[in-house]
Image 1 (cartoon, rainbow, N blue to C red):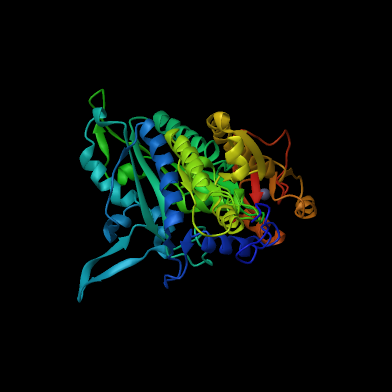
Image 2 (cartoon, helix red, strand yellow):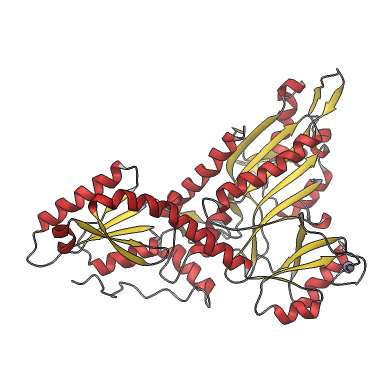
Length: 488
Ligand SMILES: [Zn+2]
């Protein structure tokens, strides 16, 4: 048996770049991420491998939230209709997407219950009971739950579903300054996990007024670029001001003895979409490529047996390597099954295992191992005495490489344009456009129609239009420098 065997057990995956959609479906299924055969449109099943990755992603965000003073809560999935209707803009924004419980057993309910599409109206009535003094503030809490939205657009596993997983924070502060500062902290939390650990780059924009979260004063959004050239919103943070606190009576005795309403923020981390982005951004034609921190198995060891060489000696050496690495704190698995090395290579490539160690007679005799890194598909022969040090280096270098590659890919897709003609000319080579805009909803709609789907995603906070700049659509005075892209 040769380690260079190119034998594959199953049909090769389609090319990711030219056939992204088919590649994505095959990887979700063959790597065991989700099963889409549940039988209810928009509802999917997380399989063991997919859920093992998801649990690690959840843990990363929860740890950052706890470090910044957030504490866990868990509210019921049902919201009484009267509460959901209290904030007028909010219900207007969600009404068409709500799933309702109308019956309990054979009895029609007097008041319908909504399955939470988001939890502001579930949580805030209780916040009004929990908060009575400035000493109760800030109150910072989060929950990791599924939410339900009756999506009418075509559903896609993990990207657009009628049930999806997210983390939502709900924070209350004494002052607007503190609340606005929280939206910046939310962005930092999101950056520390999404980009620094998971290697998913994103653009941070403020949604236009006509496109903000129903009931919010401002919405800040995080959009990532998927390989088919469309952007995906993977998180948002909202400054709610006092819009909900006035409706739900979240008020407190202030320092000077007067009564004030709480200043609120909420922050949604789109876990299902983040998993989709992780798969789509880093994967290649061999399958998943996982950053080590979220890989259920970080290192897989594969024996390369040879006729005439003692199987026992080979397996003893593998056990020595395995326990060395496990002792160093890594998640290691030695696959001693009867499958051929070629079949195993194919399988663990597909699962995106960051590091593969191959051990045959040559390695045993020379006290070495072959180390293959999944991200670059490069192999290196390493002395056993140096192995721990080399693996520690890879555990740092692999996420850095994934991050750099993904960032470069996103950056080379950004172009600045001054006219719709220019955008149409460049759309074959770029996916993300920066341009000047007058902020009107009519212009955004016109842009979308004339360009065949390019949307104004929001304004950049750190870039402004130049002196005398004009709106790309109407030619009127530009107020913002915006991101324009096709979106999911
Ligand atoms: Zn305009």
